Image (cartoon, rainbow, N blue to C red; front, side):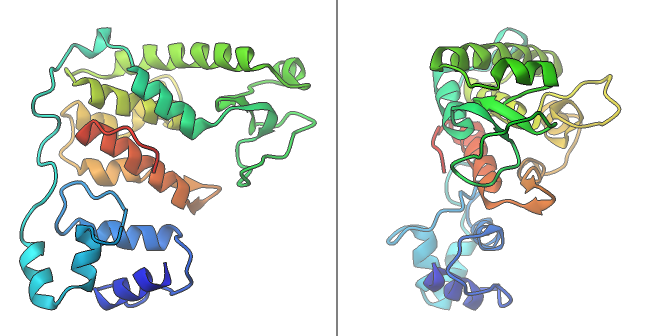
Length: 258
């Protein structure tokens, strides 16, 4: 990683720290660099691949390559578009969503950054269980205080998915391909569907992403989507990777956890 950071500093990011950590600043530098020659950057640098070759090549090679678009240039051009009101997430969408949410069968804080979450002994507004299910009340917390089974986790996930799906169907006003619909559903599961009745103006309903998809805004979809990378008031490399994964689903129909 230090070598990559050195190369990025030599290619337009002189203030980037060389600390060997793939944090949000490094990821953003990679994405910004890739936007010069990819329509849909993925934030990944691998030996022998184009981004690495450009970073290590001579200036003429970089200059010539930066003027040529590479990768997908349109959204699933051969995909069939359907009425979003009657669409369902694909099995690929559910599988990717479960990989990101991770099943934890005891109450924990949604803000806990550790991979192995600390078990909560009393309710607070961040209390979560199963596949990212937010525990809304102390009474609900008491039901799950001692943990849940895998079967219960799946049941809760299905219920949460159902209610989010209902809102996503209502909010989208245009026909979409399956991968486009999947990506928006996965995003809504994480940021919340939102509601026109909510005074907090949060979630998919109030997002620039929805406005762009519905043709009500000419803003940049990439920027609007990746704006949801904040955790505990700070930019999160993990969330940024998740946003990039969702964009790969939306733009390319590729379902991978980054």
